[in-house]
Length: 190
Image 1 (tube, rainbow, N blue to C red):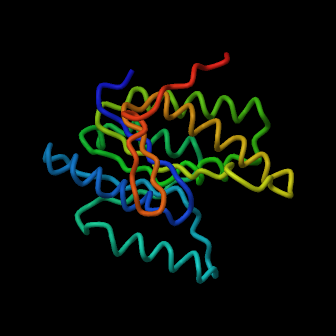
Image 2 (spheres, rainbow, N blue to C red; image 1 turned 60 degrees about the vertical axis):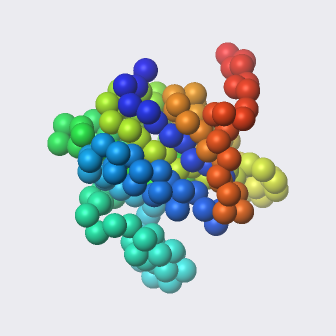
């Protein structure tokens, strides 16, 4: 298990997850005088003005002294988490959905191997890791097969990350609920 205290911050779109994650990692950094690396997993969607505006909002909120690393593929993210030059850095990973989206072409076996390797990197991280994760399975069943694969893979990875984090937060409507203090862990079926 990890030496550091890891946090999972999950919730719906536009609920405040990223802002809460930025706050939490800022508190950790101030308390320990350790640097922060922001690990962005979203695609650089050239030509998508809405997506670019969303990325710009994130850029403007981040302190200028935070490092930025962009990586979406699970193997790239694992390399960042294991990078010896970032050993003392608190890492804010925003978000799991980017990793899941980048791995949608992988078959079930390859995806499971990617998850196992990613989760091992999370467990062995010696400085705190704050993971932002989307909740996408709360309502409408996706009308496409690939949408269903994304929903199921994302939900399973969020749960597996939650099992490895000391704090789990649900952020919705601009409010953060400490699930680690309010909830009972559901026993794993297998």
